Length: 285
Ligand code: NAP
Image (cartoon, rainbow, N blue to C red):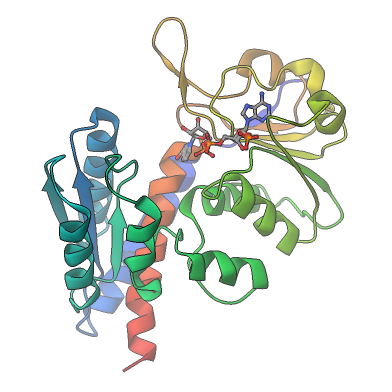
């Protein structure tokens, strides 16, 4: 059996076109959705990510502001910038690119962002809203994974989903989103005693670890849906996921590639969240 591919690039294009149309509609009401991206320091990977985020804003007709600061920026200076953006009516989403330099408390900075502008969905208020089923911004990566499942018409009700990884930005919110769709969810992590025993029972597997070949063909039930969040480099320096793609695609029913899977969806869902934040301001008028 060869799995069908869930194409994150194609789905992203489609969703970004829909976003662009809604942005145009909002502009006729006098609102241009605006995203502020703050980058502190010179992490090369972060520089690529923020460029892609700003480009996605441009492509969908949104306003964007990119603020870059040297490593020497203090926590107090960064908090002051966040406060200023909280008060700026042209900005509907604030994203502070992680990781931050070690002398800055990232959680403190995230908590300083107004929950109304927390389009990354990392604020404790956003996490609490997701946990309790209240409206709020969902973290973009797991939100993108849910959109991928939706795009293939997959009904999660009663299915067994196994999430590998328990980070606050991917694994845990992913599990909550799957649970909200009535899946039975197992969360695995580095201390899980027998990962294979868990994944072999899964109808849906989401791998969010950051280690190559965490999931191999012998660990997958035939026909399962496999979503690969991981971003790693192989021996040739090429981007690869957590899943042994060549092996697993022979067993799975559906699979996401790396690159071209979850990666583009993450930025797309950032656009969706920023647009939603701007649309929310209409409700508060
Ligand atoms: P993280 O904070 O490092 O969390 C990794 C998780 O994997 C932890 O919960 C860890 O368990 C678990 N783990 C480590 N080794 C394991 C093993 N051998 N078996 C089972 N679980 C294991 O990473 P993250 O931020 O969630 O990101 C995960 C991956 O997704 C990374 O490759 C990252 O680059 C990628 N990512 C991609 C996107 C995208 O847009 N495509 C976005 C975000 C992240 P413990 O909790 O026990 O340590």
